[in-house]
Image 1 (cartoon, helix red, strand yellow):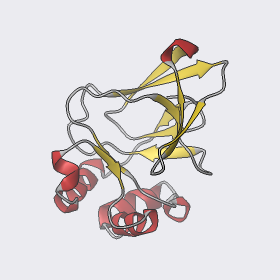
Image 2 (image 1 turned 60 degrees about the vertical axis):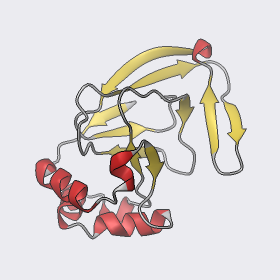
Image 3 (image 1 turned 45 degrees about the vertical axis):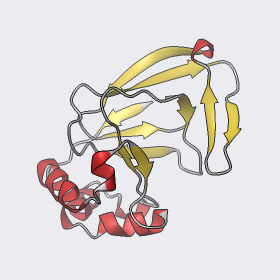
Length: 151
């Protein structure tokens, strides 16, 4: 399984609640980050939104949330093919606003990823020429992604 769609009964309420309390910096520019000063603060921020907590409780995931990142893109944006870093193998992704016509491509590769450390960020990336597109996940609905697969 590279990804699996999940059902969130209160998705519209959750989306409304999150967008209404999300700091402005996430609404005006493309960004990847957390709310507050750390992944733990970000997790606590989101778990204190009742509709978010309710959705995660119904999925039996509240106790498994270790951090929450917000990804904002503006217009047509692509990122490097990469692996997510850290000890986590799965990522729950919930679209919040304007996610129509968005997707994540899933790839396979027979080469090792390139290690990159900017001093601020560490990543494992791939050259597109070294990858084969194997699937596409439409991201206008909640899904769980296997972060150990190039995407």
